[in-house]
Length: 305
Image 1: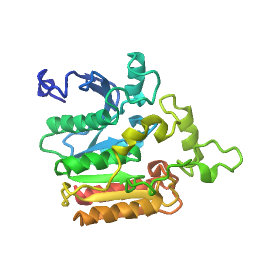
Image 2: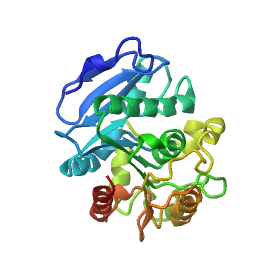
Image 3: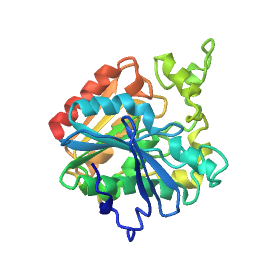
């Protein structure tokens, strides 16, 4: 159990801290420096061998990763994940509080505030588990946030996992319609790019906490540019990195991840592995071969953490 005294009122990062005891995962929250309540989720285990901080993508929320968290729990890893500003329960609360007009808007501070909230959760985790290793696992937009946080705080991590990611350079990421390849199919829903399992796209659309706006519509050009760039010289090259991507991922696919791996190696990272899953689309943890993908993730973590 957490020690609430670990977050004194004088700490500006954690101006308010609360826990609501529920069935797993635990719903918890803190207020960021703008006064926005950030909802996060904890999947605890007794005496975790490491903590995995999961960073979700655009238009979704942390609870879509229940199955990933439970897989990691079964191996002895605790998991934390926040619903980013404008997303999930955090976004719902922002609308209810009159901070934003609709789900998807990041609110005051924009992308900088999102990066700060993810970093704040890392600090909270380290306060609660000071002697336990921390792994960051980012998917899609979450992997972009993870890359930029890794630039500054890589020494805090025991490992970095990036799913559905890319080198963040213009011309590498697909800035067009991500479902274009499948738009001609009969009864195309717009969610085919997510997974070969069409139920994934269906459930995405039916989830009231998800939304379908594009990255550019949600984030805007100024905040998008804050995520762009190759890994910085400041990174700790000793931190091992796992990249996982589907060969049919329309965001950047194999090419974007090969370029990202090269960029990390240029910064001195030797322990980096890239798994490319043939035929898989963007959400590899929700793919038809998700067991293979999750088993690869589990085996890699067991070997590196």
